[in-house]
Image (cartoon, rainbow, N blue to C red):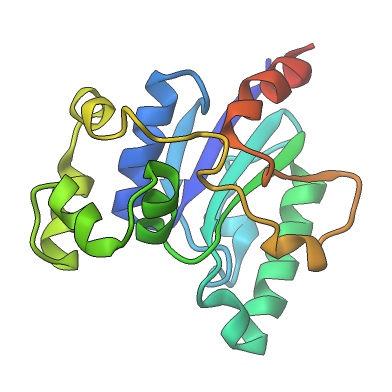
Length: 182
């Protein structure tokens, strides 16, 4: 039986992923892990095996600033490729706030903060991290899943056929997941 695991970086991403799980886009257990920081991935993620489909939601705004981050990320992605059934990577262009501004069609971050009844980034993050999926559904009713988390930033690093970098759109995940289950 196929097992699904999602790795994410922050609490705000966790809220979005929980909402996407309710909507049927992402499945399985969730673990907070930053792939560019894990030194011994085989110990940290020992629950992954050849029957596991791994989805990684990662932020790309700082990973490529240090060569050691890129080297560790490469090493960890290779490990995931070798030890899982399938690897799906969803990349954020900059950070979650920028993706939400783009996906909601807002003009800037200030309007995003207002959308979440916040006056600044700190209170916005606290509110977003604490929203349950049902409440998040109201806030994200206008989110365009064809452009949210749709970037090509990792294609320059990963051209392998056995890795799927989901930069097309979250709206294509359901179709892809049905193919895995066959």
